[in-house]
Image 1 (tube, rainbow, N blue to C red):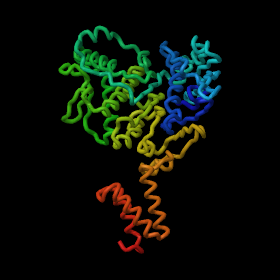
Image 2 (image 1 turned 60 degrees about the horizontal axis):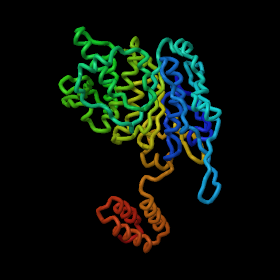
Image 3 (image 1 turned 90 degrees about the horizontal axis):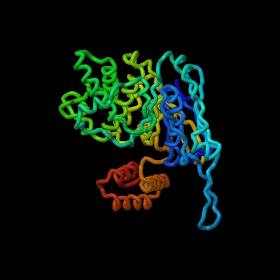
Image 4 (image 1 turned 120 degrees about the vertical axis):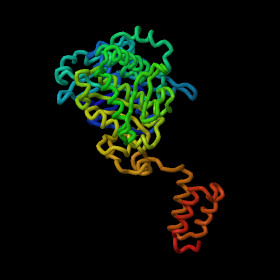
Length: 424
């Protein structure tokens, strides 16, 4: 299954927009304010109709802030703001060749306030039938979200209050974009106690651990043994890699972001589909990720999409990013460029490009500060025109501004030196 098309009208800052998606990996790029997060939020709203029909949970309804506002200046100091209707968000999802639609429409503010205009409630039986009983993995991950996990001071009380996990709980808060670490910690504690009491492994828990291990091994590009488990000694989940053993809340921000994401995806996968949790390739779904590059070292930015795809080969990923490393890291990708003036354009894969080439050819900017780029271009023109005096003046200015040990000054100097007609 995968999201084929999103249709929007008067949603936040978007007047009207249709976006086509591919199965596999889709990257949404564009300047700040172009609407990347709005697109992901609109998709989340429509997907919540599907998850609500499957689980009986809640729909993420439109609210007043989702309605586009149009402003008209009525005087030099006063503007008139008016909400634009109808507001609409509609997703077309392909379920193994069968297209189903999920959407919300509000023809006026009363529709929005009264939670009207929901389409797609009645597709549960069709989805289960066409998916052969597999419940799709649905999740919205935001890398800028707050990390909530901390040491548990009252471990026994947690188990009593948590109770039994139901299959439908795999969709609980799956599209809120908020942290789910505390629930996962409680579940891991429950699993550890059950294994101790039964003196045998819990299948779903071992599948959860294997998924986390595979992803981290792919991300780190090694086969080192990885383990995540609840430790009664520290009262928290612990991450163990080789000889290193740390509570998750003591990991770096980047590691916490990565672990939060993969643990939630692994948890939801095994809870929704315990019968096939040992065969993760059969689990399909749609995962939304906003600001995937936040907090990540460039090394991980190069590898994170490949690691996700290797771990969840049948899941569609729709990812918003600014990172040139992320953009250039995968070969088979649908790049969706959002532009405030020109709308939606689809770009060819940038696989194999350098980060600098991506900045120039896919993101419309430069790989260095504008002032430095200006000096580089001026020196290049002076050299082309054989204007030695102007070239030397540019070089001397750069020397005074950056110093002789500056990498940028040395780049300019090498350009100057390579022109054999000059006496350097």
